[in-house]
Every structure is written in C-alpha cells, then in structure tokens.
Image 1 (cartoon, rainbow, N blue to C red):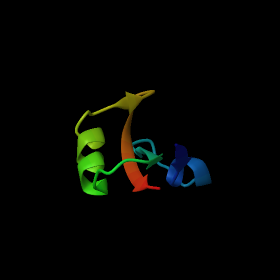
Image 2 (image 1 turned 120 degrees about the vertical axis):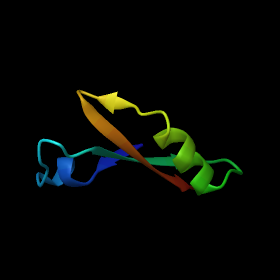
Image 3 (image 1 turned 90 degrees about the vertical axis):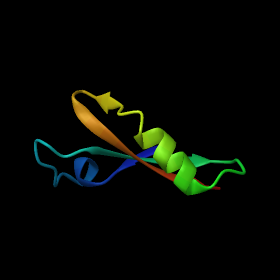
Image 4 (image 1 turned 60 degrees about the vertical axis):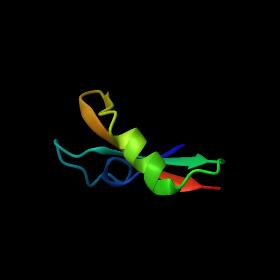
Length: 56
C-alpha cells in the first residue's frame, strides 16, 4: 500500500480525499477489487479513502 495524490504533494483542500494505492497478487480483476474496496466507505481522520488497486 502507498499514499499518493494531493494529500501527499501538499495540494489538498479541506474536503480532499485520501488516495491509497493497493498492490495485490491474486487472480481478480482490478475493477472488482476497486469496487469492493471503495464500496466500504472507509474514512481516516474524517477523510474519505479512495482506493486504487494494481495487480502485481
């Protein structure tokens, strides 16, 4: 996992989400992992987490 996007590079606004890159090894399409993770509505410190899976 890795954090990227506006929160890392300092260009965020108060309502900016938190972008998380998720690297995984499985025989599952990225779109299924993306939809599954993002449907959970997980937040950190009151910020929505936006997951971006990449199959390795």
